[in-house]
View 1: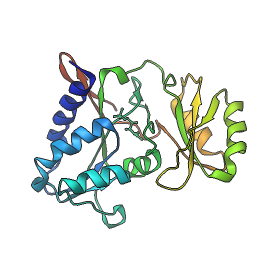
View 2: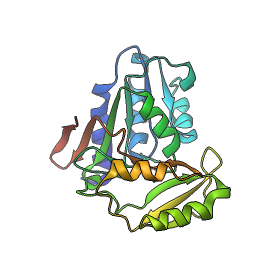
View 3: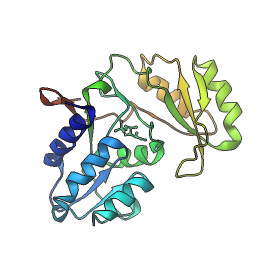
View 4: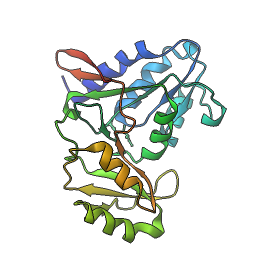
Length: 220
Ligand SMILES: O=C[C@H](O)[C@H](O)[C@H](O)COP(=O)(O)O
């Protein structure tokens, strides 16, 4: 199976986690694009969706899925999103597509985070994928120095501006053995809007696309 077929398979499997008559959270990325396309087939089952990016909003609207402002939503049972890496505890690196800040807000608002990945995203320790950090532009050099002091090699994502008007530093060379501690430390650097480490609020369930079918992993 190709990687796209694995993504498509896992995206379809996530439909069973979509609650009837509710608003759901929808992430961003190539795996989520397959999920949005599959969701279109059952769009009458949901009231609408909260979106983590302009790209996902556009795709959902093109399918006739109602996109709702998070501020109007009282209860969000489920958030479905992909990841760049996921470790055995359900901690993730996200933000390869630049949508980390809105993703983290929706993840925090949701009761359950359903992570949809193909098997290439499973890692024993996070950090091979460069860790995205969204930064207020005037703090670029300060945050770069602080991230170097934490052992990383931050590089500005060239020509990229987030949906929130900020820049992204991709931090190379990390091995994140204690993701919760590391997330808290990076969050505390003034100028950091969001670190793409999702450990303090990790996944509740991972659906993993493999050549042998979709595997499910639950995290406590
Ligand atoms: O900003 C992007 C998101 O965090 C994505 O969920 C992540 O990059 C995974 O994307 P993909 O499904 O394209 O590998």
